Length: 438
Image 1 (tube, rainbow, N blue to C red):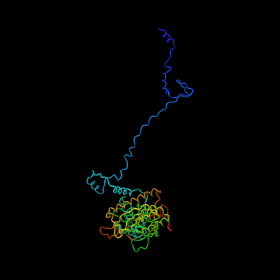
Image 2 (cartoon, helix red, strand yellow; image 1 turned 180 degrees about the vertical axis):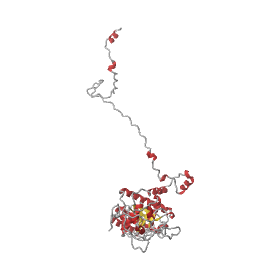
Image 3 (tube, rainbow, N blue to C red; image 1 turned 90 degrees about the vertical axis):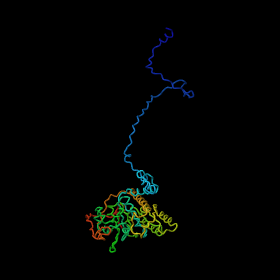
Image 4 (cartoon, rainbow, N blue to C red; image 1 turned 30 degrees about the horizontal axis):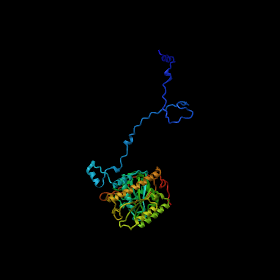
């Protein structure tokens, strides 16, 4: 054995397992500046305990999407349905199931208006159609609103001729199956307030477009007039069965029935023609309504304007619209002149109106529906029971007669047997509160 081997074996053995694996020093960048007090090539002392390695949590498994929204998703809007108007509609009908041509913007706008007219309302809504100017188109406007809403909503609409005496709503309506008037209903108001829809139908005039008409007094011998208290009783009966009541009012703003309707109405609709005298009268009406604290009724009012058949002077349209906007009116819709709606045209048959007229009034109905829907969101739902009237009135006709075709039957049908009424409560006001007239 050589001297070097003897010198090696002379060293004490070292347990490499206890010593651990030697650490490889990190490469030193020669450009780095050493901190003070640490010599180059030496290891700086380590102070403090060694930090524990951070534990990364396992990611949570992703949840499967809920299939319910997919299964119960709303159907696509009416703008996605195939066209039914014009050449595109004809081609779609010829192609049958393969006809998928899209509708043009006017048809889409009409479909959206029909959809808006079917909006949800909470409780019974009373729409007041008013204009103190005689011959302004209140009665045709009432019939157009009731017909359009009844067709689009499937019924549940009544047109109320709320003239104090001898209104013309039933005379302009398409059908007159009975002779009953508002006084016949008033004679049985206590029983009808708790009766069924079939019982009240005997006192109304059903129309081909599914709405019902409550006719005004037509008897020259009947000297009583519909006033504040009578309106309250009529409303109690109608509100039990109809979610929408459209009231055709008279020309006397001082009459009790006119003032009751204004205080109870949920929305005001003002038909007018572009005439200077009509604009001045409507402006005065709006001022008086605001003076009685009905600012909200004025601000939300909807004006339905049309051009007279004989035309109008230049600039009168802009002048009338400027006056209405100055009074706070923001919703002004225009409808075309239709000969059937003119005052001397007789009964109004909806199917015989021009397509332009029907489409324009569909837009009006949509605007009315949106206003009623917004109004329902701004006030709480009135769940108070409807008071029952106790006052009895003399009927115009002692019996309720049904119409036979083609001529009326001469055999009278007795009035329906009605259930006795309970005790009455006070009149209901605009917000469900009790109201009193002076």
